Structures are given as structure tokens and as C-alpha cells.
Length: 378
Length: 250
Image 1 (tube, rainbow over the protein chains, first blue to last red):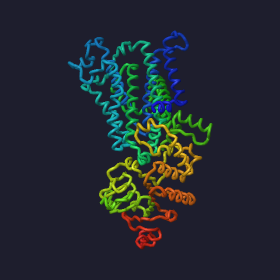
Image 2 (image 1 turned 135 degrees about the vertical axis):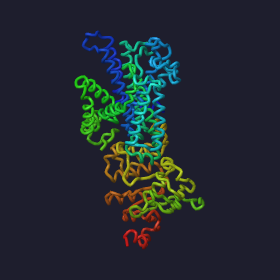
Image 3 (image 1 turned 90 degrees about the vertical axis):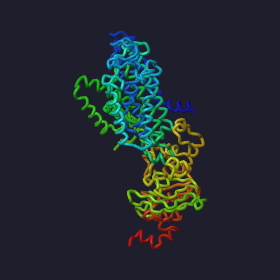
Image 4 (image 1 turned 90 degrees about the horizontal axis):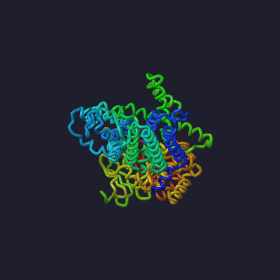
């Protein structure tokens, strides 16, 4: 049963993508660690970390695509789950600092000493253990998504209303995490990390390993997403996206399907956040900013929603563009992003990958290719 | 109340439904015997679609009994439960999964477990594949099975939707204006298809097209302002002075 499900997901496309990702996970760290700095193929460490960040974004984009591209739920609040996963990892990293902090308190992180707190709040218990933090990385976003989805989908909140509520969710969390007495470092967030599992987070080898892990997790989740979208459940999800009432009158309990994919997607976003934080070295409330969630939606739109490869391509392309643009013309990046969104919506409604797919399919066989990509919105 | 409902497939008694004071359904009573095919006609706003919404659980009536197979109270169930009891519904506007192939549309409709985990690990069985072939043949879509449903013509979409209803293996089919937007030839074919279906299942057809209703050759119920105006053969109701008045005006 389960093997059948897994085999189903391992089609040619998934094999190629997973193989490419594994190759990247191996070759980039090798080029960074094994080649001498003057070698033409040497990859500098800052670039490894930068790309690691992009691949974490790609995982977030994949999570957004799973709910938006395949189930029609336009989430404008996925950065909330990303940030929650990031905070869970950040809390572990804070507790690893121990006596090396400015105030050298063995238990309390610096910001708590600064606020004159005497003991660790209960919700920080257990975060000195990596396995516990790793569990929270998926459980906390998963639980919040489950409760949110339970009420929203059962009350049949859809479309633009749901999108607005997801914005409200991430904005509420943003405001909450800004408060010092929440116990998450307030405005400054969590930073000044030293070790992860006993390895120095600044070291080249640790950075290369984190990069490789990020890409491998992306490969794993790509494979899971591929298996899900190719299963009958995946077809039901597309059915919900295209004709929700039809699905309901066929006897499918639509809210359960939405809840399943929504919770899973939130967990994926949490993992993305957890991989992001040790690489950038900081997590603060600005990660909850509604604009971040919208940016993630733009990556998916640019890459091509409903294609799985699209969000990865989109996240990496747009972020490379952002890095380049903010270096050359920093004030104009937001205008460029807005323009990009308009151009894609007008001229590439299926995104980069969707357009390329349609082009190839038309060349090979003019009669209707079977594609799960949605019709462009009007 | 259940005594009268005994032996019936669908039993509506004293059903009322108002939207913001507008009485869409007004003391409606309707009885359908197992295996019966019934045509429902009526001018716009007569409450035909609201009646279907009530039967399929989309709308809850304010008062009245809606019973399936004499004992199951449909007013307490939601759409998914009612669909799984064996009531299939075709919408007025053909509603199929446009970005799925014709074949996948049927596969999704096939009678099977509807839970999320059951579908996640579902593998198509040989029996299911055979049933899909059979349904595609019935709806004359065999050569289009790999085509996206979005590329079908309007009439073909209507047929695909009927095929999806059959795949659910319902005991009662509710069909809303199946002939709307079809060519005359397609309309005649649809009547043949529905008569074929009615041999094994109960069918309720809502229709405007009188030729089509005549082709079906079944008992007709005339709705007007949310209540039953007349019932009988098409010839009997069309000579009923009250019906003539409603349709032609004074």
C-alpha cells in the first residue's frame, strides 16, 4: 500500500529533480571545502550560505504551492509557519550558547538576564535537547495550522476571505513576538548563536553541511509532494481547487482534505524556517511580516504554480534577482518585484515552468496534454 | 409521519424555506417511489433548484420532513454524507474537473472510500478500471478518455457529468436541466441515456424544454412559487387550466 504510494511519486520527473538536488547537495560543499580558494571552480563560503538560504526559501515556496497550486488555498500567511519553525530552531541554538553569552548565565539566554528574569519560562523547557527542538519545528506550525484550518475550513471560509485571515494570523504573531514579555527576545529576536550539535555554526564545514541538509530536505519534500499530488488524494485536491461543490456532492468531505494538505504544508514551511535560521544566524519578528508571505506567493507565481518544480525555480530566480538588484539599485527592488509580478501575471500566467511545459507539450503532441497546472485566473 | 413515508425512496412533506422573507419553498410535498423517474417543470423562481439544494443538504429547510428510503432524515446530514447515502446531483451548468482527464473525472467519482487516507494510498483495482471503461462507453467518451475535460464540448461535459453520477452508483439521481445548451440531436440522445439510466435507478429531472420532457415520457410535477401546482402525465398537466395560467399568464 505505502510502497505503491511511494512508487507512484517516483516518476521520471521526480527522479530527475531529486537526482539534480542530490548532485547539488554533494558538489557545492565539495567545491567549497576541497578545492583551493584560487581554483576557478571554488565556491566561496558566503555563496554557499547564500544559496542555502535560497534553498530554504525554495522549500517554503514548495509548501505554498502545495496548498495554492494544488488545492486553491491562497495562503498569505505562510511566513508565520516558516518563522515558527525558525524560532523553534533558534531556541535550541540559544540554549546551546550557555556560559558563552555576554552575561554568562548557564541557563538563561542573554535577553532574559537583561530583562531581569530569574528563571526560564516553561515553554523554553526541553529546547536544550536537539531532538525536542526538531520535533517542535514540525509540531508547533502543524498544531497552529491544524487549529486554524479546523475552524476556517469547517466554516467554509474560502477565497479572498481566507487569504485575509491568513494575513491576520501572521500579523497577530508578528505583534505578539515583538513584545518583550512574550519571552522570545522581542524586537531583537534570537541571535548570537554559537553551536549546533556541538559544531561551530560559523565554521566552513558546518555551513557546507547545513547547505547540503537544506538541499536534501528539499529533495525529500519534493518527493513527498510528488507522491501526494500523483495519488488519488492529489486528484481530489485539484478537484477541490477547480470545482469545490462538485467534490462535495461526490461525497468527499472537502474540509478534511484541505486540513490535511494545509497542516502538512505548514510543517514543511516550519522545516524550511528551521534550516534557514542557523544559516542566516538570526531569527526575529520581522520574519512574520505579511510582506514576506506575499513574496513567497510571488516566487510560486513566477516559477509556475501547480508544477512542484516551479516554486523551486521561482524562489531561487527571484532571490538571486533580489540579491543582485539590492546590490545595484537598492531603492528600486520593491518596484522591480511589483513589476515582475505584473509582467508574470500578464505574459506568463503559468509561470516559467508552466510555460516551458506547455511549449514542449504543444511541440510533441498538439492534442491536450494532461497537466495539473490550473487555468490562469481571470 | 414515517408510516406514510414507508416504501418510498424520497419523501418530502410540508417543507418550507424562506430567504430573507422570500418564500422559495412553500409547503412543498413530493413523493418518489423506488425506481421511478420524475420530471419537474416550472417557471423561473418556482423553487426547483432550492428543492434540490434541500434534498442534497446544501440548504436546510425551515420546517418539514425530508426522508430518504422512508427513514433517513436528510435535513440532519451534510452534502458528503447525503452523497454517500446514494444521492447524486448534476448541476445546471456542467461542473466537471476541467484540469483532469476525462478518465480521472470518472475515477474520482467511482464509488469507493472517501476518506483522505484511503485516497492517499489508493491504487486503482482491475474492477475499477473495467467500470471506468464501461462508463466511458455508456457516455460515449471512450476515445476522449485521455483528453482534459476542459477541452470537451458543452454537451460532452454534460454527458461526462452524468457519467460521474453513474460512477457513484447512486440510488437516486437529481438532474438539473440536462438538456440546457445542447443541440437537438444531443438533447434526443440525452433523453435516451436518461431513460436507460432510469431502468436501474430513480431519477428526478428538472427541465424547461418541453420536447425533452415529452421524450422522457414520465410523470410530471409542476412547481409554482415553491409549491406543487399539478402532477400527472405531461398531457394531463399541460391541459390543466392552472398550469396554463402560470405558464402563459392571464
